Image (cartoon, rainbow, N blue to C red; front, side, top):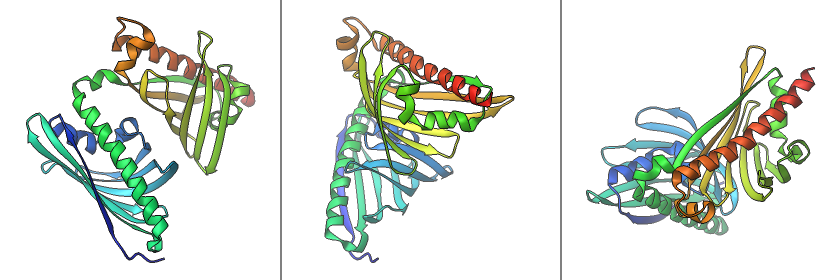
Length: 315
């Protein structure tokens, strides 16, 4: 394996928001799966005030790839530098810099610089990487622009909630119930159909039809990343009309006599869809309540059925 030719790209966007707001979105990598369509999950491996080591799962040209990167954050200069520590072929090396430049107190310019090399300098690899960088950079810059320009509303549009059920059961049995989502149509009354593939161990691609309380069915598509035997994280890649993003996780932790199992949802609402879907005069607050109830009902139902299943196995 040899690396010979470095390649460089620059993508930029003008943002009608203060530079500090834009920098804050770039710096908070934990929210990237919520904010950026290509990003599935980000896991902190190391972290201090000015640097972090992270593992990222993200789509590149329709495939879920994972890599480990180091980032250096400079809040004073409004810059974030990144470098892949472990890349996934055809990428041999990848790095770059986010640069935020103030234009005036209410507007800024965001630049995203990349430098990369392909394994063995393969022309097909270079073309694949270039296409992925172009596609993902455009998506990320446009997402940051949209988020920054509505930053005053983000606290209302983005919200997180948990549902927890304690079970007198073995964690391994609960995990198996959650991990074997391919069996959910047999186990969960609200799941009408579920197709699951796991070409890479621990990375599951799901398409699911869910029945709602009014009898209708909606389709979602998701990517799940499975960690050990106590945590599964996911991102919906096709979401219902009221949302622009939905991420979540299942966690299992031991308690006296069994385990506590938590379903967490983080949702970003789509303001323009509120009245067309819920009716004239309905607000973002109404949408929050509607989505919270619908998701909580389904996840609590799943948790209760997992409880019955796992407790029966313990006997």
